[in-house]
Image (cartoon, rainbow, N blue to C red; front, side, top):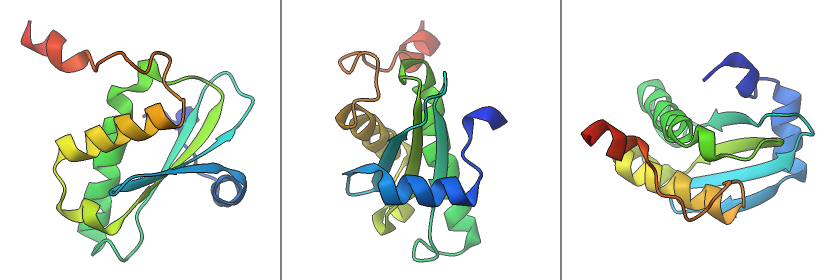
Length: 125
């Protein structure tokens, strides 16, 4: 994910978590707040309750990849923080991807919520 699309500032992370609207799933919590920019920005966090550094980094990579695959379907103008929950440590990528898709749809961040993920179908053709 390119640098401009990442949330990196600690203050903005806290602002999104404090003022944003949250949507919850068993694996991930999504917190969204408008940013009034022509693009959306994402931040990913995993606390020490998830596990050691290797597990936390893996979880963040899984969440980042799930969002990257849906990038073209995400509406611009939002700051989003994805917070990993404890069960994600044992989840497969397909579980994380399904959770991200579900949360993005619930939050109303998808351009067309009924559009299936096309990347896998194109790879098979």
